[in-house]
Image (cartoon, rainbow, N blue to C red; front, side, top):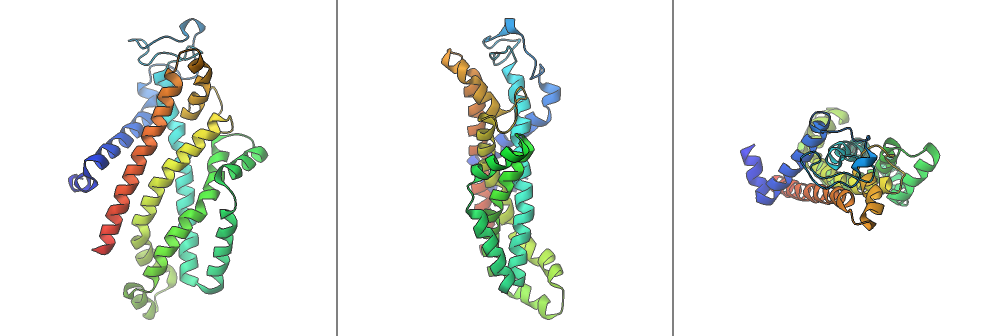
Length: 275
């Protein structure tokens, strides 16, 4: 663990610590959040920071600190769905394409080119128009849009690894392609998968927050950072910026921290390949 933080450097270590803090806050929200995030009181509207409400209250009298904690849960769950689905399907398509080559590779490339034609948010909006607004629908639609990016990056790396001796040797010994792929090829592209997943997580968080802001993702009164930015618009105009500013700051800081972590992991993966 100490070597990990040493390799990450000071900025990378701070970024990892911040992401860990956000994840911990999301996991412990039911325990440490002082109030129900969906219930407020009209007589407590727009209260400033105090011992009772650490970050004040919103236009409905709901505790902003509690809503930020609970909002972290949905704000992290959606991107997690995107990253897992994208990593599984993108990696499977890439490795299948690389191993079989020929017509299979050509067919896979045409499918990925077709998916590239659809903008991420447009595909998510089309899915939401058909299946209705929800976090799951938006996340799955974005997953489909992210798959070609992940598959292309992994394919290019796996294609180089495919012709190296450590892959050719077991192939000449008659070991099955599936065994070689799982035991040898996949572990060598795993660092790239982790790095891509970290970066994709940040992009997915921004896009899902944008969909929630537009009312197409998480639905009010459920707590979500994108929903809080949207709900706080009117409060912002009335001189109460806390809800929008704090929720927006959470998004920006989390995405920035994930970007730093992804960059550091990418550097470590590159150094490992050179070694």
